[in-house]
Figure 1 (cartoon, rainbow, N blue to C red):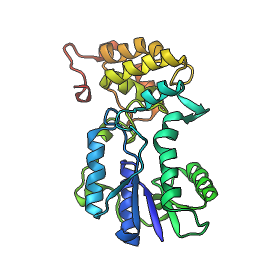
Figure 2: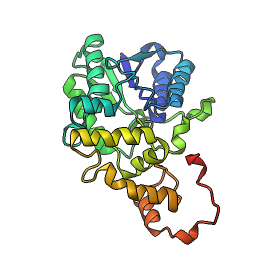
Figure 3: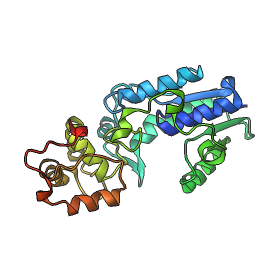
Length: 270
């Protein structure tokens, strides 16, 4: 039996790696990762991946796109003149993750259409629809899928329990995805506007070249006046941590008189 952990660098995938190793032993575990350009994948996520792998005493197996070091999702989109290759399916995911993963899998662990190769994902009990879709896709490829955070009795809830700090990015960003994620909505892009002006400008330029918006129905240039008001006048802290509906309701209800004279922006913007 071989258990392939889709080891993204996020906290959930790290917990899956730990649970799987404790259950099946390190010799039966493969940590498969797709390294992403350091321009968009934070250095502390890369640190976190290494720390967990070192704790498990398992080398990370990389399945990377060629020239991944410089090929960010935005650059990849400009090269291919599109942000999506189908409705709701980001082009960057296909080239940076899906194709390298499938290529590695078929080359190194050809499907046997039995249960000797199991692909492990970090979906939890609240992601039932994703679990069903991924199970169907993996079984169609000739493998089995399992979801330890949803299906197993847990032995660990956070890597802090074993002395490994969660990536600092989780203080602001909801996931360990790329900064300037092409699948994200306005709340994520407000964070990019405040914290990564270089990626914001690059994304605006990409929209102009491609002639299509990243966020459905609105271009980043159209959002910029509102985002400037949120940042400079309302001092809205950039964060993905709150529910989007609650976040935007707070933004709309915020009054200028709530800001104290001489107030500084929140810590995360500094």
